[in-house]
Structures are given as structure tokens and as C-alpha cells.
Length: 218
Image 1 (tube, rainbow, N blue to C red):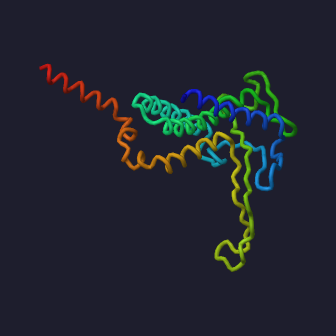
Image 2: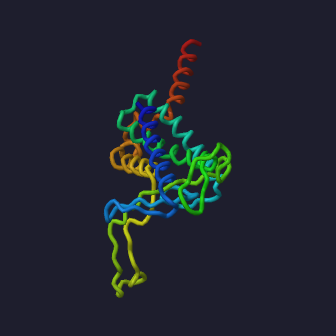
Image 3: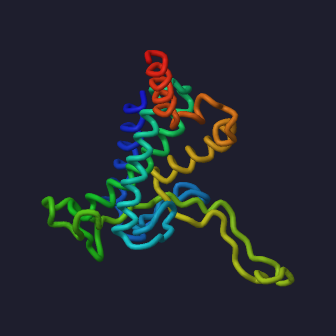
């Protein structure tokens, strides 16, 4: 189940990115509703376009974090945690892997024209090297906007737009997974669900059990 879900989410994420990248010019937008638009941008940063350190460091951090998450999911499966919890963690993993694919390979397989649509190129002839690809973002939800009254301190007269970040499907998977974890699995992060919260102590328990057996045998 976990593998199938992760693969499905990654396929949806990559399809949406490749479609936008090959059918939209940079910064081109398409209005679906007044509060929902597709806007093609690329970024070197984390979710929602945030920047965080050097490109190589960021990509390697994502890879290490995803590896740790895979290891954690395997532990959860062996422990027999609930299917719902596995879905939540799998969504976070799929989102992380979706953005890693952009960073690892998009620079190798796409050109990056100043005008026009991006196209596939021979592997290695793209706009960047391995791990130098840029993450594709496209979902834009300007839900509402207004101007602050002049009498409001600090922001009086400024224009306010909610929601401003542009993001992708992978970012959505991560965000929804984190919110679901915080809302529906409070017992885990509060330490009340011992079965799930102690997943990482499985090997420790086994070691203690083996030591007890050795002591009995002696």
C-alpha cells in the first residue's frame, strides 16, 4: 500500500510539473477561477519558494531526510501501526521525493529558453548539472486581497494578498501530511500513543530481550 501510494503521488506531481513546464512560458499564467490560477515559476528553494542555503546543500539535505523517512516508514510497517498513519507519513515522503526528482534530473533533461516552452533534450545537455535542477511551481491561490486602512500601525495603506506563495503538488502533499499528523495524530507527537511513538525503540527492545534470554541461559 505504501509503495503504491507514494508512486501514485509522485506520478501526479511529475505529470503536473512536466505539463506546465512544456506548455507554459516562464511566468505565464492561466486563470481557472478568480481565486485559483496556474502560474509557471521555478525556484531553488524549499516548499512554497522559500530559500534555504546553497543549492547543493539543500538537495543533499532533502535526500538524507527522505532516506530517514523511508527507514522510519519501514519501522512503522514492521511495528504494525495504523494504515491512516502510514498514509500521512507516505504523503510527506512522496512530496519530498517529488521535489528531489526536479533537483536531481530536470537540469539534465530540459532546456531553459528565455522565451517559449521548455523542451526535453538529450540526457546531460540540459540547463544544469546533476543536482542543479530547479523545482517547478504552478499553483497560485490569491483567495482575497485588500488595502489596509491608513490608521493601522505599520501596515496602514499597504496592499494585502492572501494567499501569496506559488507551490506545486509535492508541496501540497508535504503540507497536508504535516497538518494531518498534527491534527489527527496528536497522541503520537504528545507521546500518548506508545505503539507508534516508540517505533524507533523496536531494536532497543529486541536487544534488551536478547540480553534477558542470555542471562536466563547463564
